[in-house]
Length: 244
Image (cartoon, rainbow, N blue to C red; front, side):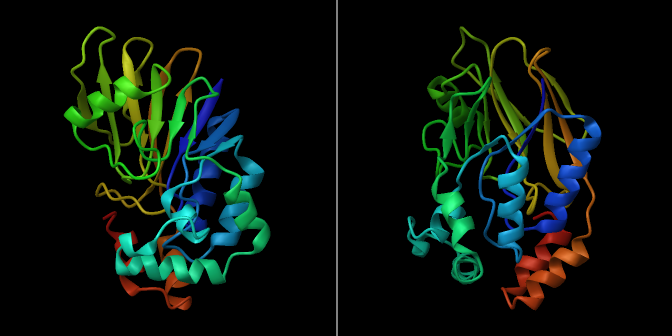
């Protein structure tokens, strides 16, 4: 089976539409979303509706939980908190109800899914090999996927070795993941922070156990104009052009 794995859409409709088109062209059978469908961007309703219609699996992320009133926005940056407040006012009840029915983790699939990490599915940013080693030891399956950091990267460890090794992954990076234990981040659809402003997603082959990183260009100007028109903080629009 071919699966599109993606995360951190953040209400960026042009980016999400581009990833869905790209994954359709790749012939994927399923789509797994790792959460944070909303927050930062200006199209929360349309993005939630697309996630509900197109994704066979979907997690809830910390921004989604904040919009539901389940996280205190005092732990967020000022811009993120402002976006949460705006999103609460501009998201229909049925879409908030959909998010409320989701979990931050799912161990029922061929790979384990977590919004943030196996140790803390809501908050932990997995960025370093030493930290990843502990997370790999805690994950429910041999292979797991995480989002949250907005950085496309991966960590691996031998089955009999507690040490993990990790690298950032550019477009076209292909991983042979049939052996060992893996923790993989596909990057962000709607707000990449790894220096590449293109929308990120990952293609998983669950028969061959291969994973391929994809980046796809999208209409950043359109996404930025939507943020500006909504009177959200300006830098949420500007950073889209930088991938930071």
